[in-house]
Amino acid sequence: MISTYIISLASETQRRAHMKAQAERYQLNAAFFDAVDMRQATQTDIEHLSVLPKHKKPKKQRWLSKGELGCALSHHQIYQEMINKQLDYAFILEDDARFLQSPKALLLPENLRKIAAQYDFDILILGYVKTLEHQLPYYHRRIPIKKRATLQLPEQTIQFGTPWEQYGCGAVAYVITKKGAEKLLNITQKPCVPADDWLYFEQHCGVKVLHARPTFVLEDLEQLISTIRVEKANFLQPKLSSIIIRSIKGWCKHIAMNYLGFK
Image (cartoon, rainbow, N blue to C red):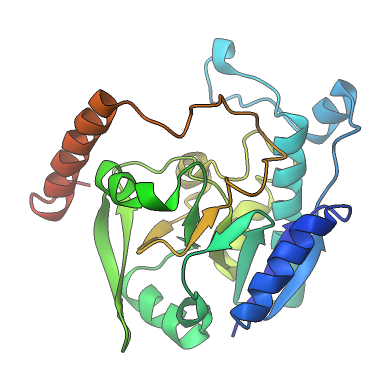
């Protein structure tokens, strides 16, 4: 089984206990990785450790927040450790992850090689942020994938694919290859985007990102408060009209990608 890194601030004892229990339950080869703590950083510190996103229009450029920067630098340090240790794969978790089912089959090198033989991925997304378990059917309708690979297991079939366009779906749970770490290492040394800006990484350093269906991990929104962002109270309750419109758009994308050959 590949190594698992759990990114967590050293002071977050509740989150560490939460993740330790899950790691033991699913028999993960896991170790905690102390997150970069930017809570006391000044704006001068932020501007020293990061850069503005020059690929965006001037009006849309902004410095990363303290939480975003600390998160991005933490992921960067794991990429560096992977390269230093010459690890072929690593499973990266953030400390607000909640497993929906065991990921063990996707942490076996032989299964990862089977997936890579069908689609040469760098990143394999196993989980998402800002959604609840009962909303996953809608989430998958809204953001369908173009099927790229399949892993047949005795108990289930797992599909892997790419969305119409990569998006910031979180970095709560993903497998990364050594090749992926090498691609991301330089661009994340002084980050200009959050750790989960997969579209930027795809466009600017050729990272190939796959998404798994079913989803294995979600951000634990109900038990743990995000240390990176603040959301409106009703952000998890989409309007019915929005659900209908986005579902229709999602079905159109699904047909276009999987039956008409687009993307």
